[in-house]
Image 1 (cartoon, one colour):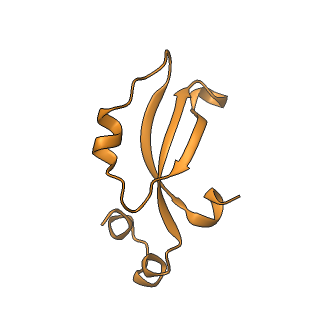
Image 2: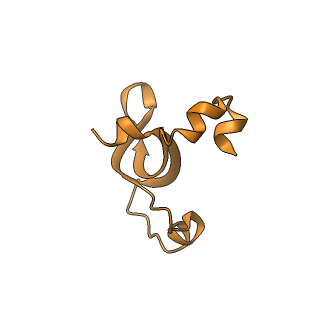
Length: 75
């Protein structure tokens, strides 16, 4: 649904070229941007809301879920 909302074509959506990622980071990178400290793809059987519920933040860090291109994550 998110891919459709942001205008990703049906062909791209069906190709499996995107993956939901669990990302931990902090604000404060270059120009005050988001600085990723940890990134991993979320498994098909995992539930993002359950993952979020059990997470304890370390000082200064935040967690968010991002949709990324699979090829970028596999690097």
